[in-house]
Length: 393
Image 1: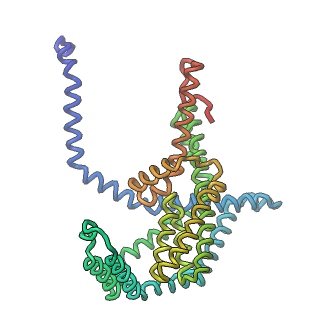
Image 2 (image 1 turned 90 degrees about the vertical axis):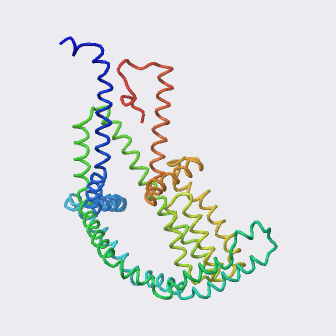
């Protein structure tokens, strides 16, 4: 018995635990593919419901606004059923918007896209002219040797030929099965989002009860405070970017119509949509619009349009957006760029969209934690008090 209580054996226990941990880690890594496949299958099953939750969260903004209006009604029945009526009214509005879009907007966009594709040969000739003019310039040999005119033209020609010979249509046809599955998944997501909208209050009540049951009061209060702040950030961001995208897209459509661009509606809508991506979205959208104008209407027209469009973009970035956001996202441009870049690397387009609200709440937590530490140095707190015990909001 003394052997089991000896210092030598006790000193070997950490090494034994380390060895066992290495063996377990090795076995887990050997079976990691099975684990990842199981996780992938699980998320594949719940993916429509996660998508439905995102849709429900976004649609909850107008739905809650409609519900607040219904709560002002004098009828007790309408007030009692305000949530269900608000969901119904919102669905009718969405159906009306879709119907109008299918009748007027989608056909106009389709004609614009068809015209762009049908005029590819003319665009090829335009690009060939640009390349010829570029090679006519007196440039250093070190630069010229990295520019292969034949390779550039061959790549452009091959790309256009692939479209013209119908390889794009072949790809669309071959992917019909995937498209059908995506449509089914979308249908499930939409149905799930409707039920989530209708049951929002019950979901919130259940989540609050569960959190209160598994955490201490101090932790529960802190999580609720930061959750409300994060929820506010996301709602403010969605509202701001939507309104700003509508304003910016409308202004660009007007500018492009003034320059008589045949693709004004398409380019304006693209610009309004990509504006959801912070900082980079409007820049890329404007640059794409200028490129299309240059190809379809010539470089002189594109140069003038670029000056006007980038001036509008600067007006939007420096005055319109800050006015809409207020002080909600008071982040430095460098922090915005870093946040969007990291978000793109970790989560693609979705990561870019959620980067700013997440970083904003992280910055708030860090600022208030530093304030707590600074206050603690000046006025030491009670012995058992922690950061979560403080009323920092």
